Structure formats: C-alpha cells, structure tokens
Image 1 (spheres, rainbow, N blue to C red):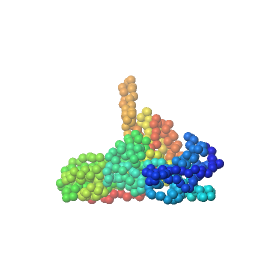
Image 2: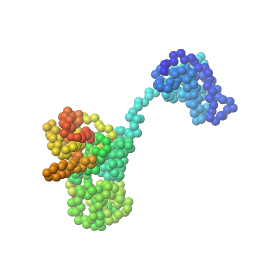
Image 3: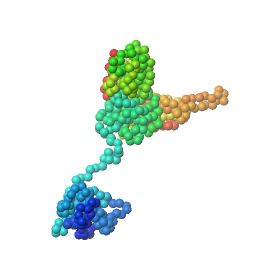
Image 4: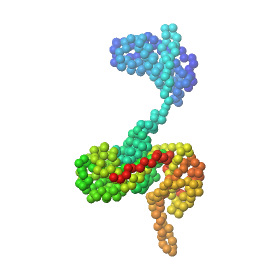
Length: 433
C-alpha cells in the first residue's frame, strides 16, 4: 500500500441519519471534513484503503458511526457543536486504517490535529489471562483454607491469591490450564519423609520447579468449644500429621482411634461442619481460628525440628544464575536397572557437587525386569526411577558437565528444575507442652 500524496479536499458534505429520527429532514453538517492518510499506518494484506475511493468511503462510514453513537447518548441539536465533536471523536478513535478526520475552517485550510496521548506499551498482562507478579499472583495448593500448604504459599509469594484444590493433581492441572500461575506442593518432611504422590506427579506433568520453601510445622490438637480431652474417642488428620504426632498423642493418655483424611485443615472443617463432639483434629492454630475450634494441646509434634519442604511449580522454567545458591532436581532411569547408580553418583562426586536428596520410585512403565539363566532360572529385578537433588546451578559448567556424563549412563534423563535454595533463617517450632 502506498501513501497517497495528492489527496484533494473532500468538500462533499456527509449526510447522517439518526437511529431514531427527531427531525423530518436529515441533518446536514455545515463543516466539511477532510481525510488525511498517514504513511505509517498499519498495512493489511487484503488491500483495504488501497485506492482513493476506498479511503473516501471509509471516512464517510466511520464518521457516520461515531456521530450516530454520540447523538444516541445525548441531545446535541447545535450543528456546529456536533460537527466539531464529530471530528474530535473520530480523531480519537483508533482504527486499523489509521484514519484521521480534521475539520476545515472557512478558508478551507486544514487545522493541525490535536496531539494524541502516547500509546500504552503492550505488557505481558495483555497477552496472558494470568497476572505474573505481586498481589495478583494466583497460587494453587492442596487443601482448604488453614492448611499448611496455604501458609507455604503465603511464605513463598506474600500477598498472593491462594487457590485451594481438593487433590494434588488438581493443583498441577490448575497451573497447566492457566487457572493459577504457580502451585506450591509438599515433597518431603523432616519426620515423615517423602510425599511419594507428588514425586510421581512431577514426572507425569510438564511443570517446572522454580523455587522451594521450607515451613516449620506446628501441630495443635483441636476440638469443638467445651469438649475436654477425656471425651475424645477419635483423632483425625492427614497421615503425615498423624505420624508426626504419634508419640505425643500417646503420652497425652488419649484412648482414641486415629483416622486419616485428605488434609489437616480439612479435618478441622469436618469436625466443625458436622458438630462432632467426640472427635479431635490435628491441624494448625490458624485452622482453629477459621473453623471456631479450641486448642486442647499446643505443639504436639514429636520433634520441634519438624519442617516440611515445598516446591513452587510454574509452566515455564526460570533462568539459572550463579550469584546465589541454587539447587537442581533431576530424574533418571536406565534399562539395566540400578547397576549404573554408582556411575551416575560418581559424576557428581568427581566434581565436588553435594547431593541433598535421593529418592527412588517404581518404574511404572517397566516395574519388573526379567533375566533368564538356563542354569538357575529367571531372576526378577524391580525397576526404579531415581530423583536426585544437588547443590549447583545449571548455569555452572561443572553441573552441565556432570549431567552430560550422567546422560551417557542413563536411558532417560529429565531436569525438573534449577531454582534458588531457601536460605531463610532457621526458626524451629516451639517445644512440646
């Protein structure tokens, strides 16, 4: 499309009819308008406005639409006011053809168009329905309000919008479907060990670990107001919480059965909803506030050094750096089973890379490997996937060389994420009562 340098004044007057006529005759504008075409307009492959006739038609149609809308919103019977307002409205209306209509004075000399405000630059929030920073960040977690995962989400992303999910897998899917920006999920506890379900989900889904947060866990024994410990016959909570408080609950002299539920705060909500006066829950003090329960015993975890490690998950990985401590998580497997594990670990030992976690999970696609021997029979070996965390950033050459060597000994290798380590000061839970 070429710029039109010889556009003549369009002295033909525009006739505009109202959607609901107020006059018997159509309104005729007293001031002509002129079509001015700028060479920096956006060009389209369909060739709209490639001729002078097209531009004249576009000017007339655009003017009619803007003026009609303005007339519908209020009564502007003054013709000169309407024509001036028409030009201003059209000039301020951004179109794909970049048409600027400016009024002409009585001497038929064009007036300079009003200075347009600078166009706002396009940001990532205009392209994505998911805001990325600050108080608008949406973080999915497993459980209900009052869960420890909610507290971990608040520690990882202060002032975020926490989104509760009834299952771990739902939290993964919330991020994948752009319902949430991040997911904060537990992977291990200092007393209860690894949370195997989330390790399996890390391999099943394609999310990336972008950070970690370690949260001291402070358990409380909760019941309805007026309920005494002697009246209890049952204690419910998450399996991890039950195992972390097993000795303390026994020392309290409670003759109760212990039942597992989906999460700690959910146990407190269940008691409050069903008015269970013979049941207590192991949950946080915040859950007691949210659901109107009393704290019968405070700090009932068996060890004050009770910490749960959470990982933050996102759709895209972060760029690894070397200016602060980083941790990298990988998962690998080999067709010959665990026989290559020593070779893999030596790749890190030779480069002085410290390992912080080794976890094995059954190889679901190939759980058993059979080795036939004509003399002794068939040997059956269990196959595993190995999860390893090591203290190094993928931006470091030694980490890159280590993984290059690991790849030589494995049939499957995947980097789950390279992310900053949680270096917050140690703040253990309060001692047992």
